[in-house]
Length: 387
Image (cartoon, rainbow, N blue to C red; front, side):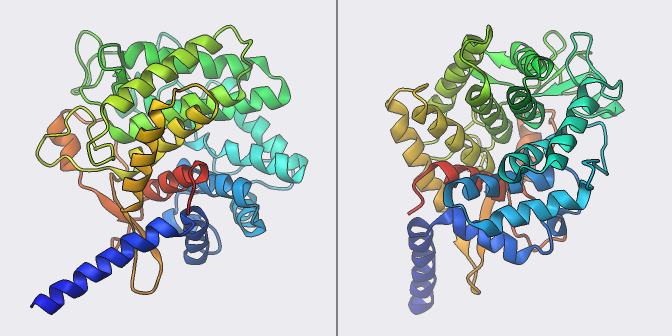
């Protein structure tokens, strides 16, 4: 019995040691490309949707770091499945989650110079801004999804699905409407969800104030959810990367990012991770959540690099990265597994409901595969020293 226990301990130790020593970004990109052929859509089956593009955006970040041509080709193969030679995108639907893949079009246009990717990005921009398909709140905020379940609902997740694409498009092609829309949408959801006492925003806001999860006075949801904080922090730092510092609202976005970072810093768990519910670290059934943690690491590290955050955040990020890597394991065949992240989920009614959604892994033994763990580890690896 002791020998069996020792063997398990040695395997676990070797797993951790391997994860701490390899180039995780490159290794995980290679593993994904090998596993999911011919494109990442083999994993999700979601088509032109953020479920695919968030992983490819992570691989894009690793490509920009390592310049491995295989990564560029893998991204291109997916986009070309949905973008024809004239730049027309198929499989479009009026949801913010379907706009996020636009960042891949902008990336491919920059890397290849092929005009079809610019045309595709322009089609997406016009689809959002110049059509009546996207429903809005009375304040002008886009519903997260165009269905009755999301009637009047904005989420901080939605800021990431829309604003980085629009802000980059607007900067590249001098389109002021795209820039202003990105800023206005981001500041609107922040104004409705941000708690100035905790420096953290709630997951979502119901303009109708009648959803079962909504505060009847403010319309906000009840909890601070790890991955939504990750999405929002990445949205803010990506906006700051492209928004000219001379813009009239630059200081507002920077102020918001810095205060969010303060809240994130203060609610890091002692083990280095950020948990499913940030404000409830001691609650039974709360768990270390890798997707939110990886996104947060990316956002904080970029802020440090750009001088937006002081040196006190370096320890926070390094501790988080060391902890995150312990959740990247290796199976018996050498392939990589990302553990302990929340599957796809909308706004929940209570803390108990958020924690009832238990963590999963990628790849999973279940038929449905979840992309969020891959995305977060790749994003974090793209800004951290990976060896």
